[in-house]
Picture 1 (cartoon, rainbow, N blue to C red):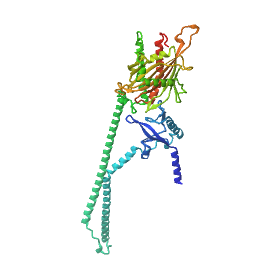
Picture 2 (picture 1 turned 30 degrees about the vertical axis):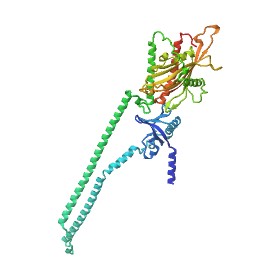
Picture 3 (picture 1 turned 180 degrees about the horizontal axis):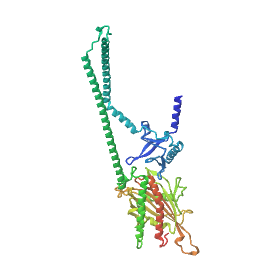
Picture 4 (picture 1 turned 180 degrees about the vertical axis):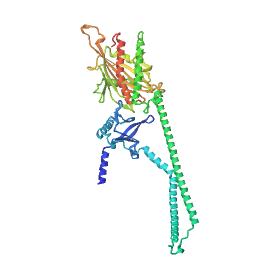
Length: 555
């Protein structure tokens, strides 16, 4: 019966166990590592792997006063903290993370922690305790000889005790005979035992001296052991002091890394010393600084506008890039003309401001976020030709592209096709980016019963030039595919009045896919997209309105 009950109890325990593999943040050197996490009896413990579970856990937390907090940006991450101890955990999917969070919260609610000793943190055979046991066994072996010597000396004392007892018995028997003889009670004096007092005295002295020597030796052995333990204690204290000093030195180095901006290899990568939220804060600060610089430049900008001068004309149709340009433009325009429902499932509305709506699909390639983005915006007072003109023309790019550090035209293929080399301002802690791409502008043919009378598009697409190799130097090469399609809408004025800018508007469809090239936290990139893309469209369209308000309408 006892065996049956114990097996039933073990089955109940196994049913209450929740376990699986999660990524756990270890340190700044090794970053995220897979660990086998077990939730059982109100205790969260972790092992290096499921196979090492029998060797003891590497750490444990009681859920009695634990705080479970999902991460703000990373949808697969959650933190478990008890006082100053925090475990940073990450699941491989949103559903897995949600299951873990619900399991942890349910244990806190159902178990009623904090009242009995059974709910307190149980001792686990951690690797530290395993090492301590091994160390104790090894250190005990160093005293086997001294322990054996003490046992041998105790056995000698036992032998000496037997010798002394026999001597005492012999003397006692002799004295008893002497007393009887003195009282004339001894019938036969010939049977009086003969005692060698000299020999017995020598033996007694030798025995007692040996006892004293043995006890002295035992005391010396005990003293030696005590001194040895003191030495080991001193060594352990020194070792801990050195470990604390090393830990403090390591902490100061980490602080130095955080304070002084290191090179790109240390700043950007899967083992970045910055957490995702710190990484995003740094990127956000850099973007804010760029906006402030742009505002200052606008305030200081005086004098007449730069006169427009079209680039030299060349037959793009005969250029080596023309097949790629024509094919890409056709594909991107077709995608831009599709509605959100037609493009397939997965589009999410992530920003909306008046007439402007922005959608995205979450996609990653080799661990890099390349979310396709689509925006629809309606702006009054400008035409599609004007929007595409200022978006395409190189002479205006520095005015509205606030993130540019340097821009150069590699090749003027024709009046409607140009290849660019652009270097973007560095936003710490990310590495600096550059890009090589061609840009093509054209007026689109009208599709009956669908498009308006005037439709223009600009398509930008990454390309390669041997003279501008990728990832050569301090910059990381990024890639993009952008389509800006603009449709002019005209509301004819009444009573034959002349057409004014209040009678025209432009429907803008903006599609883009950007591959950042180097590593950055996915949550950071998506947060930047959510912040920057709506601001970009509003800033650029405001720029076009300001440039065209006193000029004739361009169709």
